[in-house]
Amino acid sequence: MIAWPLAELLPHAGDMILIDQVDSCDDEQIHTHSTVRPGGLFNRADGSLPAWLGLELMAQSVAAYAGCRARRDGRPVELGFLLGTRNYQCDVEHFPAGAELHIHALRSLEDDNGMGVFECHLRGPGLHASARLNVYRPPQVAGYLTEAAPEEPCHD
Image (cartoon, rainbow, N blue to C red):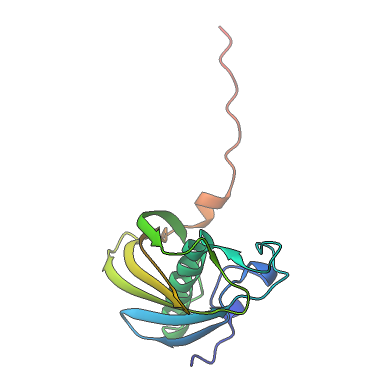
């Protein structure tokens, strides 16, 4: 188990943090888990979570992987972006309330420009989801967050 609080590893806050804990993390992979609790921002009326949230659980696990590496190396946790996914497959329509979900993300590619690809699996009682996530951590993230001033129209 990783001792750092999730709020120190993720660029998320409050109810937007969907994973509960980092179980282990090394240079190549991370294992996290989450319990489906009724009453959250994305829960259905029966307390379950829609299966599409599996992508967010995987993405937060990848973000926690980057956060663990940054903390271990004495660097600040930086913002990253989920660019897309290939072939998200899930064998259920929702994750039932009370289900213990285990997420594994394995780095398959990472370059010096901040691009990365992770093979992800989410497992729980009677369910499995998988995807390949494409992510990007820009070197100068502040430039991506500021809004450019509108250009003045040309009047001839």
